[in-house]
Each structure stands twice: as structure tokens, then as C-alpha cells.
Amino acid sequence: MTPLEKLTRPNIWSLAPYSSARNEYAGKTARVFLDANENPYNSPLNRYPDPLQEELKQAISNQKGVPAENIFLGNGSDEAIDLPYRCFCQPGKDNVVAIEPTYGMYKVCADINDTEYRPVLLDEQFQFTAEKLLAACDEHTKIIWLCSPNNPTGNNLNREEMVKVIEQFEGIVIVDEAYSDFSRQKPLRHELSQHPNLIVLNTMSKAWGCAAIRLGMAFASKEIIGLFNKVKYPYNVNLLTQQKALEILKDKFEVEKWVSILLQERGRLMEAFRMLPVCKIVYPSDANFFLAKMTDAQRIYDYLVDEGIIVRNRSRIQLCQNCLRITIGTRSENSELLGALRRFR
Ligand SMILES: *Cc1c(COP(=O)(O)O)cnc(C)c1O
Image 1 (cartoon, rainbow, N blue to C red):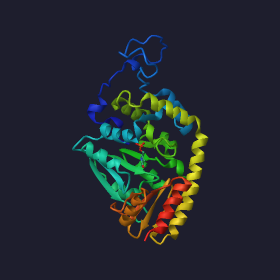
Image 2 (spheres, helix red, strand yellow; image 1 turned 180 degrees about the horizontal axis):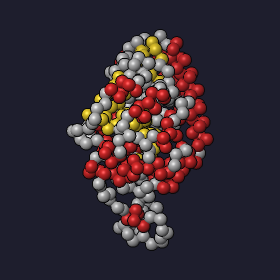
Image 3 (cartoon, rainbow, N blue to C red; image 1 turned 90 degrees about the horizontal axis):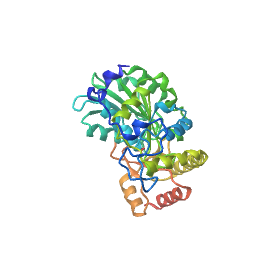
């Protein structure tokens, strides 16, 4: 790996971060807080939240099997997707490489940060090779984006090829594992200690059922986490989010139950789709959604909207012609979708 100092934008490497009132006293016990111009009334909302979310990181560490010092928490994965650009990519000069098709936020954040985005098309099985991805890189490539299970295709990427990319690329490799709770593939977050250039993303928005609270995470070396902490807004995860996340983390059996029901429903729904006259291909899925090639995706999408059922029309995306992306809902929601599709003429 290229030394982190060389990968990092010089202004970020030398940045003196904002030092908050709460940063400065950290570690000691105090009773009277007259340091942050807060209002003494309206507890607990009057106080600024923990800028480094120590208690929450400990709970996530226990749950995810990643040391707390290797965890960054952000305002959704969105923040953890944007920060690497701000830390590593010199606007107008550096570039990133990504599989295509994949999650749209990687490109949006590249555009916002004036960073060239180089998509590398997956094959017909929605798989990739390290060789083809690395061939798209040059000396200005700072980041390679992988997503496994991938969105919108639903499948796991080939793990050996991912490891090859991580080992052979000199820059940063980011693997978005937003859907790994639905997959049987071993998550890469357990191999951080072997890969100093690896960043793994997770989120509370999917299996954990907490899209509303906006909590995303990045797992990486302490050095990379240190850079993110320097660049992030000081209080990027609010108190209500920290409290709600701690609550849900205490009830992991509930989450396991949701995942198991959703996987069972995924099997049922995919099987039923295979029998639908309007469905031509059901692609394999390792996530809580699947991609289906239809006879006429746009007409079927419009019909479903009229029926009050919203799915995602992905037909204008490369390799996804005439494809709808179907999120697994409750049993009765899934049955409603099937009923509507059986009535479609
Ligand atoms: C849904 C999704 C996320 C979640 O983003 P949040 O900002 O955490 O809600 C991240 N990555 C991928 C690939 C997704 O599909």
C-alpha cells in the first residue's frame, strides 16, 4: 500500500481539526458544565452529544466483532461514502474506479467532489475480475469501490477476486457490506488487520430496520478512522440516534428474527416470480431484494404504481434492461405484489 500520508490530500493531512468543548475535557469526571454555551435547562437535549460516540461504538464493536478504535460512525453510510473523497481525492485531479452497475451514491459523491468516476462493467453474471478493475486504474486512482452483496444486482461479488483487488491495489479499497446480514459470505470486516488499505461500510438502515435514525459505519485501520474523525462535523451523530441505536443493539434477537423471515419470504417470492408470465429472469440474490427481468418493466412499473405498489425500475441501468428491483416486504405485502402481477394484462 502507498503510505497513507501520500494517499491523503495534503490539506487534510496537515489539518488542525475543530476542537470542541467536549473533546477537551474528555476522560475526566465533571459535574458542572459551563464550557459550551449550552442552556442548563431542558435536559438531556440541552447538552451536545458525545462527538466520538464512545458508548455506541463499544456496543457496535461487541456486535460486529470489530475493535472500537477501528470504527467510524456517521450520518448514514452517506457520510462514510463522502468522507473518503474529501480525505483522499484532490478535486479535478484524482479519480476512483468502481464496478458497474452499483449503488448510485458513489458516483454522486464523486461528482460533488469533482473527482473522475471510472465505471468498469460487470459481466453477464454480475461478476468482475481483479485484473479488469486494476487495468482501469492509473497513478491518480485513489479509491476502488466494491459492493457485496451488490445493489441493484443482489449478488455477492466473488470473494477471492475482492481479496486480490485489496492486495494488489496500492490505494484504498472500499467494500460496502450494507446487505451482509442477509448473506452467508464471510464479511470482509473481519480481515481489517491484514489489509491496511481496506474500508468496509455497514449501515443500520437495512437488516437492523433503522433507516430513519441515519446511522452508518466505516470499519478501517485506526489511521484512516483518525482522518475521518478529523474531517467529519464535530457532532455528526445526534443524541437521539445514539440512544435509539443502543436500544436496537440490545435486541439482536429481534433483528435475527427479521432476517430469517425476510430470507424465507425472499425464497417464496423469487419462486413465485419464476412462474409469472410477465417475468423472464429472476437473478440470484444474497440480499433483502432481488432483480427480475420482465417482459416490459416500464409498463409493469406504471401498472403497479396505479395499484399503490412501488418497486424500483432499474431498466435504464446498464446490464439491467427491463429489470425491476423488488424489496422483500412482509408476507402480506409480498402476496399483494404477486396478486397484482398475476392480474396484469
Ligand atoms: C441502502 C444502502 C446503503 C445505506 O445507506 P444509509 O445512508 O446508511 O442509509 C449503503 N450502501 C448500499 C449499497 C445500499 O444499498
